[in-house]
Length: 199
Image 1 (cartoon, rainbow, N blue to C red):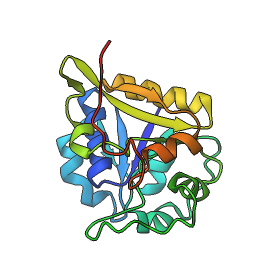
Image 2: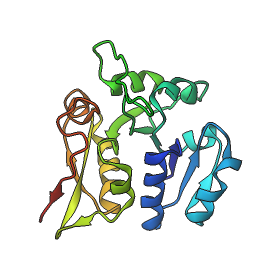
Image 3: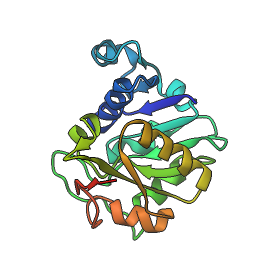
Image 4: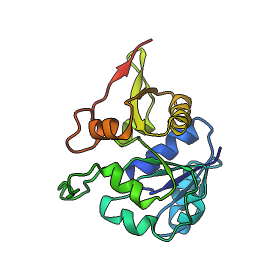
């Protein structure tokens, strides 16, 4: 099961570090090209390989974490997703102003889904701060909670497996319409909560 990462900012890099810490290989891409990712790929060698966006997007599971305004450009012109899994780790807000994007009454994940036609979308890795994603998921005798949601049960199962392999306690919030709303930042009541599950 190959893993790709589109976006090498805080969340994309944190996910890459969590994978590498657990010996899981991945490819990572950004808008500026693989040659700009030498420092990160050297840090996480041999588990992380810098690639083009097209190469990263060809993986079986692809985490997307790109500044909201740059998502359409980052995901345009890619081959049809053909049932592959996209992990939506995006939030409709970005630095430096942190002004919420205008979504027209839709969930951010519904907008992301339109940008990845044919993909099976799972919302995850967007609600924790980056340092918690890359840090030790064991805390106070339990495991840090990582929420996920989606409409495809088998896709959610595969993402849940990655969450477990990284040492987090995965909590399924149900379909995208429910879970996506709960964890969307800003506005979702579960966004940015650092919870620990015991047992």
